Amino acid sequence: MKNEFVWYDLVTTDLDAAKAFYQSVIGWRAEDAGHPDMTYILLGIEGHKTHVSGMMSLTEEMRAENVPPHWMGYVYSDDVDAKVADFKAEGGSVLLEPHDIPCVGRFAVLKDPQGAAISIFKPIPPEGGMPEFPPTGTTGTFAWRELYTSDAPAAIAFYGKVFGWSETNAMDMGPMGKYHLFSAGGEDLGGMMNKPDDMPVSAWGYYIQVDGLGAAIERVKAGGGQLLNGPMDVPDGAVVANCLDPQGAYFSLVSMTR
Image (cartoon, rainbow, N blue to C red; front, top):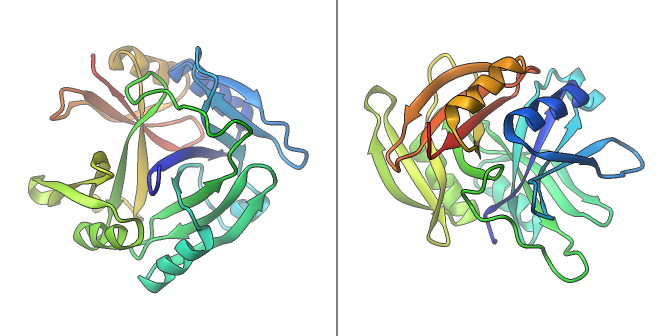
């Protein structure tokens, strides 16, 4: 679990609409977390007790700063405060200082030197220990992570220092440069590549597993979302697509079948 992605949040402008959209497209079940000060929706996979992600509304502070709807990934850290210091020492910055969520854990929101936001998180284990997550490849799980950045070689070096991620391969993408695969503990987690020129800022993107990409794309369109790119075949035999949800949050889909 150390330095691996353990959680994902959607931060959006219309919580009810986003919940309905992702329930339709992905098939997640949704339930209110019961927080006294805010509405936070937990998303899970039918047939599994654990949750895989959550969603919340943009805060007033985020709206004032024109933060758009987005998905955010959380990387596990044994010591959130020490990891914040590591980010600063290597040229990163802090968007939200370490903060405790009662009975949940401690987290911080950071920015890498190229400007991409990412969160770190140390959960408080529930009674009986941390639950088992559904295995990778299960419909509704997050199967891949992708960093679009202004300097992919610098990004792979930075994350190697702060998280210990190692580059496992670098595939030639032609004019866009190389696609750098990275791993934690020997398992590939995702890739990093130079962002397109028309992409205004560096950002992380996340791929959600579905059963049958074509049908999922049709659900995206029917629900008011947009297909940006795809379907595209990728080297491991999967097929992927990049999308926007109706509120404008970027997300991607992956399936082993068209």
